[in-house]
Image (cartoon, rainbow, N blue to C red; front, side, top):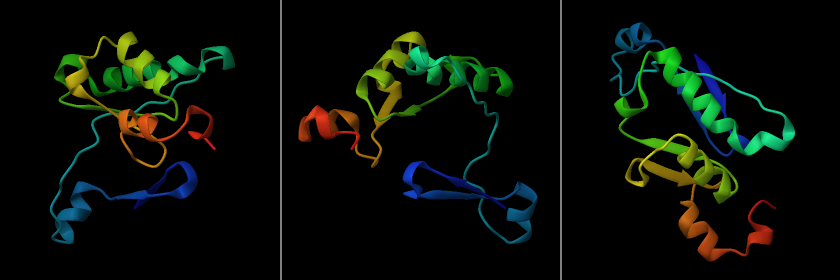
Length: 118
């Protein structure tokens, strides 16, 4: 079993193999087809998600058009929007989430910009 830790340890996802799920009589609800990580120099940090998404798609052997839904989890709306543009993703396929899992469009209407990442 692998536990994936998220920012601030706010939540986690427990993963097991498909074989183990069948052994335990659990219903498989998702399958990991590919993953990737990426890094840029500090001045280019805002475009790193697009780089990682492209690498993950390549690792999975998929094209961007084969993905039903994208969730870009970033603290600043400009990052999510910039990466949506870099990847040429239609807005109806994107869901942007803030650090506490509130959609960014609602998050930025509710809080002043200066406290969004505090």
